[in-house]
Amino acid sequence: MGVPAVSDLLDIARAARERSYSPYSGFAVGAAIRLTDGTTVSAANVENASYGLSMCAERSAVFKLIAERGTPSGDHGMVEIAIAGDPGTAAYPCGACRQVISEFASHIKVILESGDDAIEMTMDELFPHPFELDNKDTNGGD
Ligand code: THU
Image (cartoon, rainbow, N blue to C red):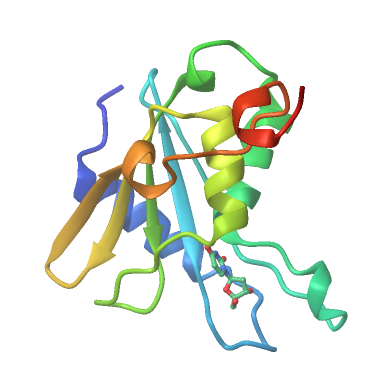
């Protein structure tokens, strides 16, 4: 099986975005994760009338992957995550999604749709100081 190029992974994220359930915000998001074996997992944001129960596309994709395939080591096989919001505009992942992506795939490459080009970032750039339960230095433990 071939490994999808960046544009292919963004296309998968765009296709996932079509499945978004976002009647409350009107903001549809799709995310697609490519794994080391070339397979992909994708998801869209899913909202609820009780707004706070809504779930972002990125976390849906990560949780779907973990729930389906378990927890192998090494970024769980995640190589890249592509995120597609409104066409042509970069949809940066929210803080909650950055925290979740960071815990499961701190070395993943993040690809954001942005017009004809794509923006590529590392998690170090997007989220340099993640919360870590056992990190006494940053969490004030003694
Ligand atoms: N949303 C995402 O899917 N990913 C993000 O990183 C930020 C926001 C969704 C949540 C909600 O359904 C809609 O966008 C508006 O906030």
